[in-house]
Amino acid sequence: MSKNCLCLTAKTIKRNLEILNKYRKFADIAELRVDCLDSDERLYIRRFPELAGLPVILTIRRDVDGGYFSGGEGARVKLLANGLAYANADRRLNFAYVDIEDDFDVPSLEEAARTFGTRIIRSFHELNGTIDNVPAKIKSMQRSGDEIIKCAYAVKSTSDVLQMLKASRECPNQDKILICMGHYGIYSRILAEKFGSFLTYSSALSESEVPGAPGQMDVRELAELYRFQKITNKTKIYGLIGYPLKASVSPWFFNTIYNLENTDAVYVPFPADSISHILEIAKTLNVQGLSITVPYKEAILNELAEITPVVQAIGASNTISHSENGWVGDNTDCAGFSASLLDFLGKKNLKNQKITIIGAGGVARAVASEVFRLGGKALIINRTIHKARNLAAPYNFRWGGLPQNGGDTKVLDLISKYNDVMVQTTSVGMEGYEASDPLELYSFTGKEAVMDLIYTPAVTPFLKRAMMSGCKTINGYDMVIRQACLQYTRFTGGEIPEKLLVQVNISGANAWNKIRSA
Image 1 (spheres, rainbow, N blue to C red):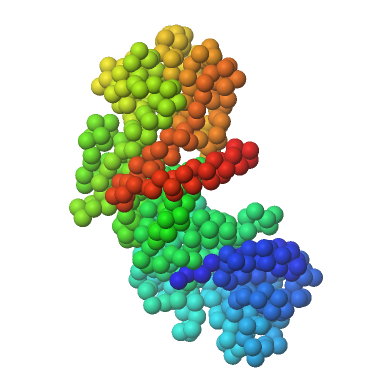
Image 2: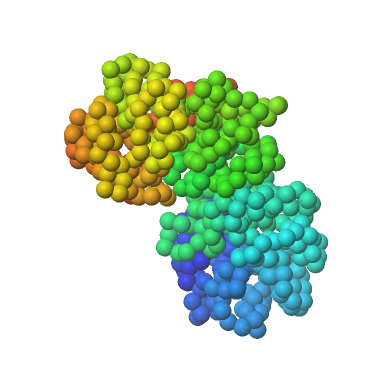
């Protein structure tokens, strides 16, 4: 199984050991980033393996490769030699690995390393450009059969990650470390075993030290939330497709459930800029089910072999599951939304309720469908007016544009007639998106029931303004948990045991309180 390597980037040996000891139970290997050490601290690196008490990688990363060492190559060679010098017959007291670049050519140092059991990690870092042929690059780098080939690529698209995944399949027998640096590559770090990677690098992000490379995950999160050390080729994979995926509670919810019921499964984020490429990755990884979020709930329809009647009716899917014929699309937003809203209002239906729906995207489609089914009347307003009109037409709802640039008096007057309930469905105010109020020109009366389907942050500018006006408010956390429970059923065919759901709700409340206060 792939190993969790804790990257140590502190300025002193003492501080690195403090961090290592604090997070030791989560790590299999440590990497000592000598390039991050203060100059005088670099004199004492030889003792670090003995002090660490677990296998250690010796790394002095050059600045051109994304590191912090800016001295000459001669000085770096001397440091590497000092780290490998006075090798002990007990190999546990030596550096277990030394990371040297593909263009590094000091045969005597490499021979000394091999003599005393230190494995060479032969590395290549592409930070700005592209790698035309990853398999060819991997094969060209190997100089000896005992080397581990490391290819670190700052990926800029889903296509780049797909290229790395294909390369892992074309070099199945080579000991290798494949790293997709950056946000698009986060799942390659979690699923290192599935990518055929010897290890994944993580950092102690809760400490003050900098991550060793862009996109490194927290060592504890990787071990506890994603149960990294238990992922094997038999582990079932589920996940979430969208972008930017910096504010979703779904990985926490599903992985907590899997952990409580001791299921060999993992749920990971799949940030993507291409539906077709991410689904090709999902097929290669044998992903069993996926949640779909902004901005792909409508675009995903073109990739599905089958859709349920609810998806056919509303034109959006937030859930796809694998079948023999391909992906099957469903939508759990509808039931999740209506159950949450009715509970919030204390009603059984929406008869005699006039509702303003803000937005006309994939979630708004589910909301409009449920408002109609439950007997409510609605006004749909959206920045792009024709989308509001198209969504409103099947239900004979009113529609209009968002009041902007000084305000549209007619639309504001219309909103005041459809303000029993107000449902905000856009990404405006969500963490990672535009931090503003989509309806800032509307003045709340305090009588509105206001629901913002965003849950991170827990209180958006829109929701805060409604609360300050005396309105009854709710965010989207309750809805997302309800629809996630339905997704679990679509993925597995079963339901979450009540006793586990109670535990998740309790721990979820505690977790969410921390998020609210952050």
